[in-house]
Length: 167
Image (cartoon, rainbow, N blue to C red; front, side):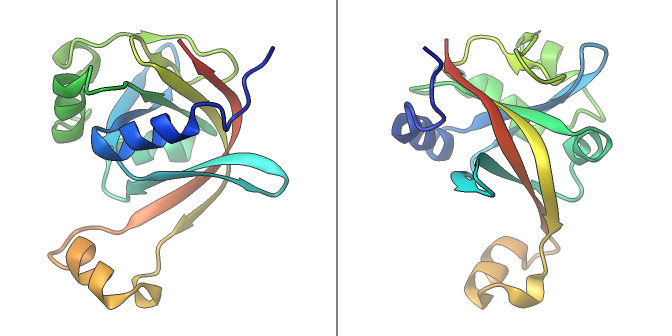
């Protein structure tokens, strides 16, 4: 039986915000991953959606804007803490994260973007809508805390969850 997008959602979201996840995009020829700890799963346009936030200066954004999909790979219980740290502090412009973090990209089921081997939960997503943040419309406290010191704003990528599964 096919897993629903809400199956295991609580533990997946707990691990996303506590230790992070890999957002990966590209294809079998060239891919990049980054660590995220912000995101949301919901139901919009009669579709299951994963909404990911990516700063406009990130190398991963170039992949997202030239493609139409991404994957989310979530390790549980801090099992890939050092790998997440490397992928969250190094840029794919400067290093090959697959080699640097000692991770392995493997084919996903439904999209071009690979998944990261060794994680516990996977979402394969097709981008439906993207929106650059308008910092004039954000709570001033949040703006000061997350965008006040020259930090670039985020682009929100709303993507339909095509596959959701545990490994």
